[in-house]
Image (tube, rainbow, N blue to C red; front, side):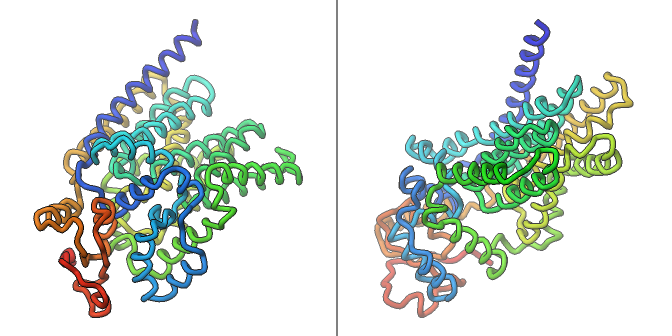
Amino acid sequence: MALLLHVRGSLICFGLLLALFLLLIARNVSSEPYGYDEADYMSAASLGFFANWTDTPSIPIADFLRAGMHLDGRRSLSERIRTGNDVLFYRHFHGPLFHYLLIPVSQLRLNERAARTVMLAIPAASLAVVYFGCLWLVPGPKASIAAVLAAVLFLTSYSVIGSTELAPHQLFALCSLASLIFLLKAVATGKRRYWYGAVVTAGLAFCTLEVAFVLILTIAICGFVERRRWQVDRKFVALSVGTFFATVLAAWPSAILRLSFVKSYAAMAYLALLRDAPWGHVSFMDTWRARIFDSPLEWGLIALALLVQLRNRSRTGPSLYPAALMTVLMLLVTLCVLTSTPRYSLTFVPELDLLAGLALVPSLGPLRRPASLAVVTLAVAGLYGNAWYQVVHQPHNPNPRSAAVLVFIHQNELENKAILAPQTDLPTLHYYFPGMRLRAYFGQVPSVEERTDFEADATIAAAEP
């Protein structure tokens, strides 16, 4: 009976957290037409499951690398992939796992707001993983406090509630959180089956975003640290590697059979090393100022949790070091991602929220239970109050250009004409007007070379710099 009441109470508590979460995040869902990334993702989804599973059609690696090395090649590449429906390019070289979920949603013929709302099931699943994962990891009566604190940190984080566009980052957060929880359980118990759970979910993360290599590296380092305790031998290593590759082969076979992952990492290296401000013209200070001031209490609790963990590491043991290790490595890898767009923080902030919930609860040990509950209640109220303020005052459509471009096309009856358009508008135009003939230009005005051999019926003006 006691167990039944505990389970019922946990489910009721999660239901309340989920309701609070959906109330917050649904206010941020835009009804505007799909912009640059979303339009390309929807184009990839329109090609169906088999095309995404096998990455067909897609240009050969040699042609891809050749185009990337030359400016003229990059200018012609966009035309080539849109006439040939290069599915990997439409996915922006990410893995296909997110699109397996987007494909059935795209076939429902929903409007933009409804489609984005349906995909909120992904962060809702992440909330469940955080809440029930903490209940699973934390022994004793403080499990519920840890679960609530970590879950509220997650559901009120602006990196989460501000990321309602169609993009794979929320799914990556879900996979990496599940993998990290399995890894924490493996370190805490020494049982290999949890290790293999971490490997499988890391494979799924690899099929979602390229930065999954940080999670894979974290798992490998933890395996080395725990090698004596887990009695690591060649069979263990071979089985772990085989489990990872079997997961990838099942979810994204062309990553290995056609070396699609090489294109993915080449594109990521190109953006990070060769492109000028690929994520926007934002400085390092502006990036972190936006992140911290959007969720100041969240970052304050994260900082406090890290201090508590460092001070009490001998008492809490090494069980939380995988979470700390992963977030440190991810922060180092993503230092060059300078942007105020919240979704790019989803690679590390949810893990920090989980770490904070797990690390802060032991620090409440000297307090009596009512005092502990009062402290957590105040933190929860502050977190939710700030999150509500953010969703009310932050713009829900920070880039209204996609709607303006579509209005221009309809008003001038250009749906099936030849259009010269800024490169940033091409995905939207290609998705909404498949019969349109398009050529991109890359500056404020088209150059002579960009106009050559292309008789445009109209030219769309570039956005103000």
